[in-house]
Length: 236
Image (cartoon, rainbow, N blue to C red; front, side, top):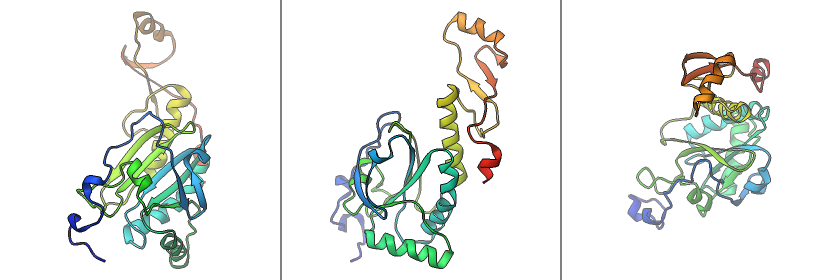
């Protein structure tokens, strides 16, 4: 059946959860059917997770994303990070599409894909934008750390495929922040200088003069930190 407008669809926009989860809070818990069997978010505790939604199976832009994410999977594994896809298509549609990507593009999809037909997970994560589509999930991406905390969210429109290099950069930045208690500047990549948090007291401001930082002023100082993953490993 085709729906000519959102009001024709049995699930009305007003009933669709559009509230986003909160950054730096526990990511909403769920258990769902996937192409790798039934999985729960709790199964990933101790591992970082990139949870991403796509509008629909057997669509061109989504297919390019899945091919790109498949190639990204081993790069993220080096960072203790797993991929987990989602759309509101059925498990049978997911399996057929994954097989089609393998047969037509020569790419195996190594990560699970959630079949969210009841929109339960999509609702928890605010993945459906009624103003864009009341029947498809938007291109949402969530980075969840190894303690189950939601650390980042990115939303793209239906028409625009995601940049997977940015996903890796984002994970690297978050893990660098955790490991070294620093911040990362605009356009940062591993190996670039990081920003030292500004001092909170007169004593802290005075003490940092002897720490070897590269300071423009007392409130803006940079330093270098070791990379968690070497350049050679990142290329591999």
